Image (cartoon, rainbow, N blue to C red):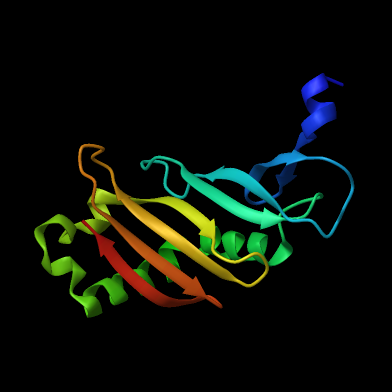
Length: 153
């Protein structure tokens, strides 16, 4: 064991059957009640860049409810979640501005963050495929329902 691992703990890796590999921050000890951050990547669309996933968990793995939401999101992205997001974007008039008019083709899901340690609350970020642009769309899901959607210019 390296000295740094002895002092600060080791990063753990798990392989989820649907979502792939997640790696933890450094974990020291075996305290199941302490919370840790877990990082992973998803590819929802082979044409788009990977999506960064940041979840909370304990020293063994990300929390089950976090993994369940991300699994559902991955499985039903095009059939359920994307149409719901499109409906909310239209309702709020976000697609009326030029930067967001063609958002389904010019934006991708860049990140998913667990917004709360244990509850099923997540923030999704849609970023432009064109890295020269800095605008984005933030979507908050609470209990699998969109509770907020905002554009950031």
